[in-house]
Length: 364
Image 1 (tube, rainbow, N blue to C red):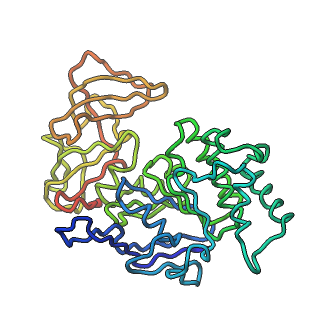
Image 2: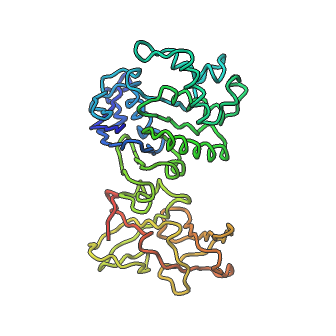
Image 3: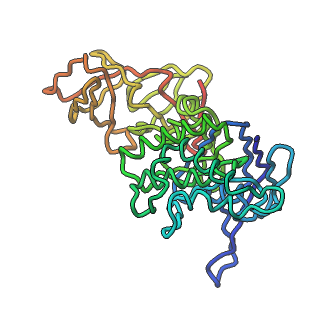
């Protein structure tokens, strides 16, 4: 089921009685979610990603714009008639019901032509329970389950209705690190098996990058960039996207372009053909540094952290916006830690420049 958002907007009234200023939570969002794909809505807290999800589900009414499921305009349709499955951050399981009863609950509320017999309901419940690998836990109560198992019950309950669209609102935030990794892999497996169009909301860029077919990066209710995860990481359209994606985060330095050459401090580090003279922000991915004795960029060496196959070189430069610069290089490189400075060349495909005022990317 293709999902299309056209100029989707959500405005909340001001909570301040003395001020009539409204809060624009989502501002003219345009997204097309292809049929059968998993799309990650990604951004910091307060960026409007959950509000967008709740408008898709019908739990919140848009202030403007339209929502289409395929050819159907569902903007004014009530949640129960949209054919969506929604998994909340806190799972929202009924504590007094068993796993089987929790999964069956949405089916028991079906009416008219959609109403199923008890045998059909049980068959479907066990089918989705097997899919999410909890078919041996059907007689337990939620309190007898681990966090990961409770999450699977919530997903099974959403899937049992055979929804047209599956919506996941930060479903992994209550799990520990190891369980998050395991459960996100399970979500991806389930989504691929069911081929249900899925919207996954998260503030964790690693989660979004690892399981999404496409990601939508949002800031203050506005879409900043849409694309395949690796493509967005490799080619951010503005400084916000560049800083938001990546672990360790991108290194940001003050620089200037002069005579089609990029300078950081007094160091000429790259050629920038076609770029006019101006002050810029320079973003360098940690893997964008190449250790070289005669490297173009000179930094003060702080520490060398060995991480197995890689080495993290922690250093400083007067032009750096961040407190330190972190360069990730191959562990086969040897660094004399007694030296005060370290020199690098920069990889052009891992170095980005941004307009100082607009913070938009300048391509070269």
